[in-house]
Image: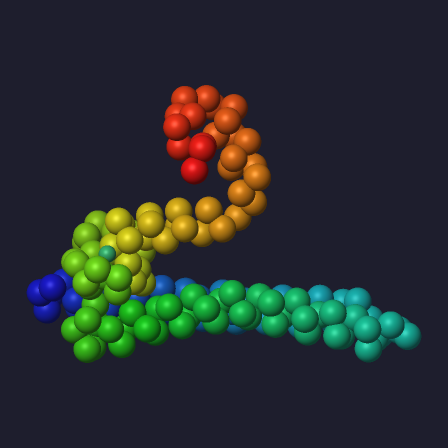
Length: 141
Ligand SMILES: [Zn+2]
């Protein structure tokens, strides 16, 4: 990948990072406002615990996104950016533009997602395969 392209993705990633951080700051602010408006009663402790749990969940999702962005940024610095972690092929720049923190090329991502789907409820898959008819040969394995 050329230096100029790397810099373009770096800028994009830094922008995304800023957006995520802004989102977290807003979540925290909303949480505080809600708490102040509800007033205090005997359920204080219980609701505090619940609120903290919700905040932790929210934070987790955002933290994961931040982590992905940070990892992409460090890959840019080590010039590993844009290389698929599975097959070491180049990730298409169109894909990188849409998802700048992609670590897999389209082919490997598809395979990964298919593997995840097969691990899901296999009964439903078997039934839908039967209903859709067609290849009976594959069923007799
Ligand atoms: Zn690949």
